[in-house]
Image (cartoon, rainbow, N blue to C red; front, side, top):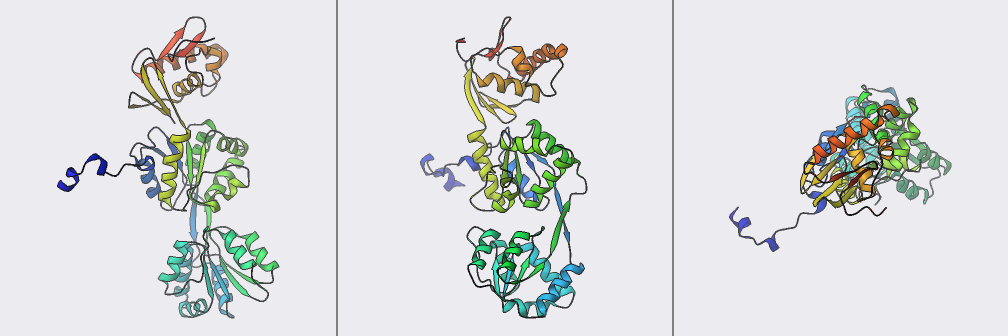
Length: 392
């Protein structure tokens, strides 16, 4: 402790934006993960975010499933040339199931004579933990690169086992078969929708209404589950439109982002497919793209997500006052009439109640902001942020 206190400010390591404790303050982020959801939520909350948990999927182990047993026996019928290992948890599950069936020694011997292609570091770690040697891992950690690697070789007559990772790899498997390979699909586990879909459906509604700033995805099946739930309620187009405009879709890697990319939605992704990297990417992206800074009534304002920082103090805002503040901030110092403010209010009040709803939102906004003089009333015209003279 003494050594730390003796260091000068110049010697102290600067805190980067993505690791700052308040980098995500004022932002609301949905988390759809089931596995390691607490870890991801903690990483985001540590940076100040408000986290909405909405598990989208659950893993159904297949240790006693006839399909996995049949695939394992197929691998043991003859030598296997290549084994594609897509996930560490899946490979460990496969090894555990084989041990339960009394096939562990035979399976290890077959895999030991094959080229083991691990999709990423976790898969590679699981291979090595089983006492086996991995042959190759793609730099991008993607199945697409594994496929390209295999297709660059003569696959005629080769036996290739592909450990699935929760959903069919139809295109991947079809390409290998078209190239002449015999492919054994190994369904170690599968994904099913989470038993209680109400949190996910609430999150879908929050995305569509803009009540959240981002949604973090850690697997492609979670993306597909959200899209499927939205489709069942007739909301898929609205969900995609929200992701394409005001709500950030953050995916841990290109495989996870695939279902959104195929639908024309650009997802924010970290350089490395890790939860920590995903949290750091959000902590960097949201403040850079989702913050408005201005001076009004002599006070520094920073509008971020669903809160406003006034002279350094974070003040959460309810949806209606925040919607009004964001509309006023689109043209700082200019008058915005009541009709323009009415259309941004959540729920769309009727014409009869519209003026009262706007006045209530302005009153609540002023009360939440604290200092007076930030929001001005321009008689018979509307309201403005006190950022200088209205030029109209």
